[in-house]
Amino acid sequence: MILDRSYGLELQPSAPFHFDGTFHKPSHFPSGDIAWQPGTLWTTRRIANDLLGLKLENTGTVDSPCVRLTIFASHSLSAGEMAAVGDEVASDYDLYADLSSFDDLLGRDELMRPVLGRWRGMRTMGGPLYESLVICVVLQNATVRRSVQMLDNLFRAYGDLLHFDGQALYGFWPPQALDAAPEEALRALKVGYRAKSLKRISGQFARGECDDSALRCLPNDELKRALLKIYGVGPATVWYLMFEVFHRNDAFDHISPWEQKIYSRLLFDQELVPAEQVLTEVERRWGRWKMLAAHYLFEDLFWRRTHAPVPWLEELIRL
Image (cartoon, rainbow, N blue to C red; front, side):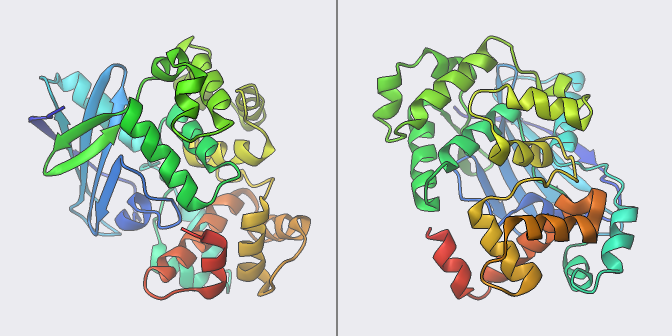
């Protein structure tokens, strides 16, 4: 699909704002729906039945932020439609968050002070709940290399290749596509037992049982209960969703063995400490900001890895 019409908007995030720290996460595995270079992000978005290309450019500074959003479409967009896309982007990336008390907290933490200096104003990189759930499914019990292969196979079979601004990126399929797909067809894409989860989750969204906008209004306890009703969402997944999709910055109540090893190194300089000790330490240090602070520490490690290998981390990633 060629997206040959473009429309521009300016977004003004709350200060401070770190563009590259927000729009590029080295800890995320590479996927066919996103491309990044310093100062610019290209990605795709399905809004209702529209497939759009998005280009976000850094046109400001950390303390005086401005983001140029260009929307690429195959048809005309009204001013209202353009504004709705801008609102969705702002929500996905938490552009208007007030981080003043968070900055004060990290500035008093000896471990975090240099990390804050490098990434002050960084936000989470969210997205639609359905797409985030697909990512969670392909991450289950798999190496990063395997997860990349599974998502690429799904994009090739069910996604749409969008051409815009010199990029060729995939747009996510609608939930109805996997809901209607035979399980055998999904298994043929080498997703294994995850075919069942992908179909069940897609069915819930296709039937309208999950609504991102309604869920955003719920307090933490109700949001957690609602997310746990989605097929395949358990304690290891729900806090990812609460943090990355819904920006609940205290959502750090569970830790996977993989992350346990990483935080053991970062917080205690030990190969492995008990999970409960990690969770107690992040609560003690950062309280209601514990997940966002841990995210800063985690992403700082992966950004450092882009400049020089971290041997103990390479063993865990296996890309």
